[in-house]
Image (cartoon, rainbow over all chains, first blue to last red; front, side, top):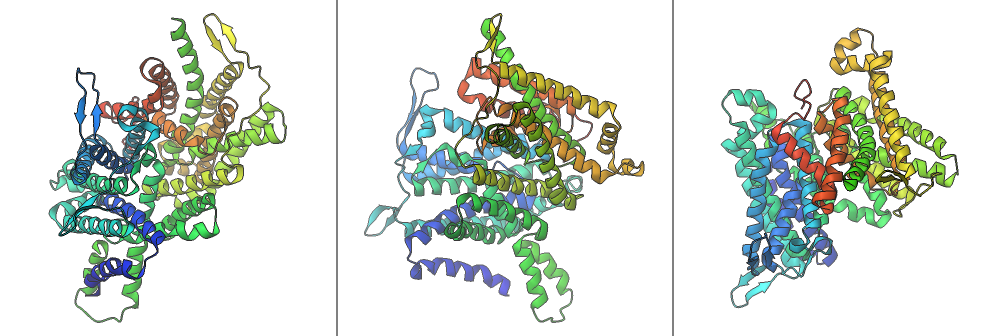
Length: 348
Length: 290
């Protein structure tokens, strides 16, 4: 009962948070953290449910950010033909959707290529992909402005009755927007992992040859998971581009993928709440450390935290908290109850 | 033609250090099944140690190189002892995450200790390039190539001609059987990691005087080392040497004749291409790993 209520309570808390938390800096931190949490949730689909350690996930984020920014600014593409291919500035939401679709398309392409290999090979292919994307963003100056970055990106907008279309410049509306997108992603992932597709993904994580032998088309499900995860990461990238309103090639840096991986692992991979818990923790940690430590020390703490978590909480915080909760609650004799609850833990 | 020969010479010199980086990484993977994300940091560490010894303490340059390599060996042994030994038997993703964490902590430590300003390692070589026919090469680059080739030969001898090498090869093939034959697997793992780390550190110490030394210098190098190892097939030592030279030639000629901006992307494009065509690397290892 409590477990069903918990997400709603948490959502109510997050939605009403701006009512009493009016500090703009805190809101800004929450917006950035929220964007990363969406990225981490999408990564969790691959890392947690299919068990594939993709270390190029930031590439989809960056592709979403660049595509959305370019479509909203307009661009011309000189592909060597007589006339350059000119795209005028598009409405922001069309641009945003374009970013999501582009990221998802790349997800499909890379999924098809990368899932020819597993394990260490897969990890290195995904890293390489993100690196190539960064090089392209740096060097295709005609399109991306290279290191000069894309600037003056318009914010996302909403239509309000009586007000017309208004740009979302302030922190509060961006906060609510990110929260809304995060909820949509959460609901999509939740439905997905409870579906046939989700069970197939878990089956191949647990035992790939066995999953194959019972007729699960492993590569197809892996590609489906990658397309959805990439689309969500692209949405996070789009939110980032229109919130920060500047995009440079550094969005593709490896360290951002690592940040998302840390969030997922810390919270608990393969759990719905894991990326959110891990994300809030590692979103808040730099802010707390900022008061007392230099950035280098923060990174040292990050690295050590990662090691400590893998050593002592290999399943992450959410499953550990679940087990603690099971131990503390008063025991009621329920037939078959433990087995059922143990099963629930992994999907909680 | 002159340009072509110059590119060949440059690629050979680059390839030597790439091969050193590659064999260290592939050795660690082949024997320990660890994807070592601290490799690039060991490279950086080697370069900083060379800077500290030759630059700050004004030691002899050649002595500094040897000491930097030994310090790399010591750091590698420490990492293995503290982080990897407790995780023996853990799955590959677990050790990979621990190594990423260690890599982040090491890089941040280097930033903390040395600051963000790039350093240069003083060296006794004249700066005027040697001209051999149409090709001109800096004397230090020639020295680096010479040391790299000597180390590669020494390493080959170590693996194929000594008892230690035999024990390593046995562990590589089957740790359990090797243990039954009296090979101390724990020691073997520590030695392997320390040796691989030492090779990365000496590569950093050798390239430090040619390039500049800065805390994030290992990032790209680590990724290139992965590219080299993938090219050769994970765990394949001769493959890593060839992979190192292949990558160097592709980069050098790609930068020279295609686009210099994409120089660093060549390796990654190469990996993606190789894995599409031959998913187990150019020189397929005996088994699928993962």
